[in-house]
Length: 323
Image (cartoon, rainbow, N blue to C red):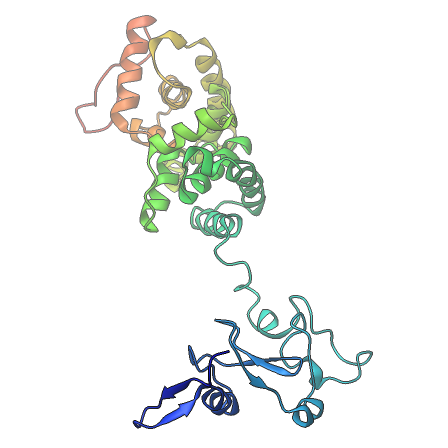
C-alpha cells in the first residue's frame, strides 16, 4: 500500500491529499474541478467528475430537509400537502409565470405561431387559422424526410386552407409576399415541392368558383360602386346579371388555350361586363380581383376574340380606358 500522498498547495506548502479533500469539502467544492458538491447519504460527491470529497456531517444532515431529485426545488417549504398548491406540472414555478416559454423551439408550436401571425396579416378568418394548423400538423411529420423549412410548410398550409375555404382572392403571390415582408424566404418552388412530395395537394377550384370570388371582390370595390351610382344602375341587379353571364362564359372557355382557371375567370368577368351596359369594369379591375396582371387579362381577351368573335376589341381605348 502506498504511503500518504502529499500535494503542493497554492502558497508553496504541502498538505496530504486527504486533508486537501476535507478542506475543499468544508466549503462545498470539488477539489478536482471546483464544482459544487452534493450530499448522497453520508458522503459529499461531485456530480461532475464523481470524486468523493469527504464525509458529510451527520448532525447537519438530520437538521436540514431532504428532497428527492424528482421534487421541485423548495418543495419542502409547503408542509401541508392537502392545503398547498401542487408543485408538479406546468402550474408551478417558472412554467406558471411564463407559460409561453415552455415548449418553445418545437416545430409544431413555431409553425402554428407563424401561421397565425401571417393569417392575421392577410385578414383571414379564424377558421382558416385552424384548418392551416391541421394541415401543417400532417406535413411536419415529413419535414425532415424531404428537407422542408418551417416557413415553407406554414405558407403551404395557409394557401391550402384558403383554397379549401374558397377564399380564392388570396393567391400564392399574396401568401409569398406576406412571408417575404415578415423576413422569411419562401419561394414558389418550395410550395410546388411540398405539393408533389407530401401527398397533400392543393384543392383545385373550378373557373366558376373563381368567377364567384372575382364578383365578390368587385362588389366590395368602392370605385365600381361609384361608377354604378353615377350610371343610376341598381347594384344588386347588375352583379347578379354579371355573375350569371361570366359563369356561362367561363364554362364555355376552351381550356386547351393554356390559361389557368384564375385567368379564365377574371377574363370572363371582364368580357361579361363589356357585353352589359353600362361598362363599369376595366381590365385592371378584373385582374386585381384575383391577383393577376392587367396584360394577362388583355392577352386572354384577345385570344378569346380570335376563337369566337367576342363583343370586345383588343387593347386600350383612345381615352386611356380599356375597351
